Amino acid sequence: MSTGYTTTNIINGAEVFGADGEKLGTVAAVYPGYIVVEKGFFFPTDYYIPMSAVASYDNDQVYLNLAKDAALNSGWDAQPTDLETATYDTSMAMGTTDIREGFGASAARALADASG
Image (cartoon, rainbow, N blue to C red; front, side):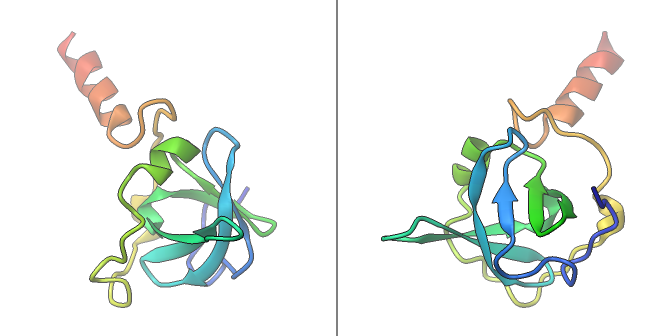
């Protein structure tokens, strides 16, 4: 899998998966700071996934750093105000996330390890 991706690598129609391997949907649009993922067939919903949630991209498949349910319950179904102006520095995309706990799990674990 490629970890040196940029938004220009991700294409419309790519499949998007959570860290748990569950499919979220397909990429409907790509912006510098977000990918828009369409989920559903008859009544599709768009999710504006920040690039910080993208763990990797390979062979027309996008993998997130959190589980499907966590992604769908992150409030990303509302269009962000900075959709067309946000950017993402891929050098910030290092580290791991506990797929059972979502964002911040790694930081919480590190803090717990440091204190005790």
